[in-house]
Amino acid sequence: MVHWVYIMASRPGGAIYIGRTHDLRQRVEAHRAGLSAHTARYNIRTLVWFEAHAEFEPSLRRERQLKRWRRAWKDQLITESNPNWKDMTHAIP
Image (cartoon, rainbow, N blue to C red; front, side, top):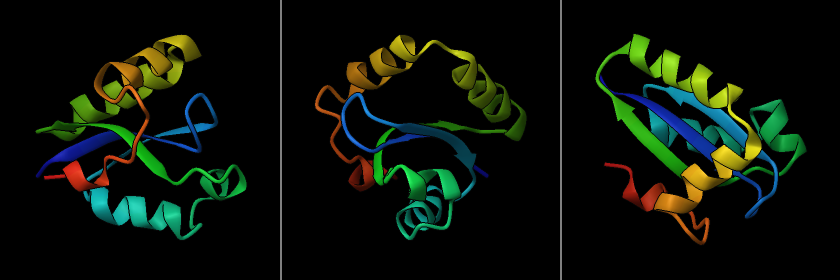
C-alpha cells in the first residue's frame, strides 16, 4: 500500500498543512469539505506538494521531519516542484 506525505496551502506563502495518508484523493477532498479544523479555519484547500512512500514508517518519519523544518525550507520544497503553487490534485496517480 502506498503512503503519501503531502502539503496543502491556502495561497502561495500562506497557511500550510502537512499531513500523511494512504488515500490522498480522499484526504484532499476531506480537507476541502472542511473536515479538518486547521484547514477549515485557515481556508487551506490547494494540494501543492506530495510524495509517495512504499511503507508506513518512512512516511511517518518524513512527515515528522517536514513539520520540524523552518518555513523557508518548506516553501523552497514546494517551489522547486511547483513554482506557482498550483493545485496538484490532477497529478495524483
